[in-house]
Length: 154
Length: 241
Image (cartoon, rainbow over all chains, first blue to last red):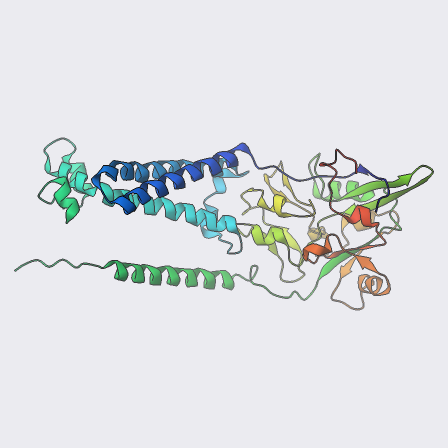
């Protein structure tokens, strides 16, 4: 095995992951980190002081996760075919799971953010203004009485 | 009359949510199993190849024939010949290893394809790429331990050797087999005990590339040097080792 060996000709087809994947990894780590830290602070201490942190921690990952799939789609050789990953699902592929995990994460963050901001939305739905119709629509016309904190306590 | 509001406890919510997710998962699995191309099945034929390195003279006829037959873009190869020299002057020997996709029985590229664009035919076990479904995520190129896959710059999809499927389904041999000067390549059905390839394997000791990975390649080599059969560390070692 210690003989001198020299490769004269061969072919390499390997590819390196692009910078878009590096961006994706950084952004998704940022999103999840923000989400976890913000929620743990509220779950552990449960004081109104941490409420703004929780709000940021809910909204920011949602925005980041809305951007992340764009990086992944742009990295594909056929970006226009990305939607086929939803119905041509191959259960042995981790990438196929990732598509659904990111989608479900975005949906769950959106639902969580909605219920977190719902008392404020209800409060605004009661106030006269050009956007009152929109706020009423968002809270399904359930403009409950009382202040924001009272609504949240219910 | 007081309006009653139906409330849902957290436990009830998670129970209902869990039941729905389980139901949806079971439904997806049933749909997947109903697709015959993805369902695990033992093919009636098992196409494979034996390459006798004693007969290879590194003329690259197989490379040219493959490129011409399959319209492979410049700079990319479905089939090629790896060349290595061994020893020190005056005791130097040259070794050649014709390479192509091994169409593995347990192909990592097939398992990792997120859309199922890479599939194995039920009839003969050849691994194909469906160009209409491939999204070009490159995961198969990274996954292939043999470096046999590449992204075709014309179609922007994964590409690889499929034993010239358009030829073998018409009873012809792959282009590289027909073009081989020294008749080093023998192609046929490994499941047929009377085929030339089965007799060749039966009468000789054969090796397979990276057998330690348990991918069960269907390309066998006769009398190939152990150094040339090993993994390619050329790039790491500055094209020398």
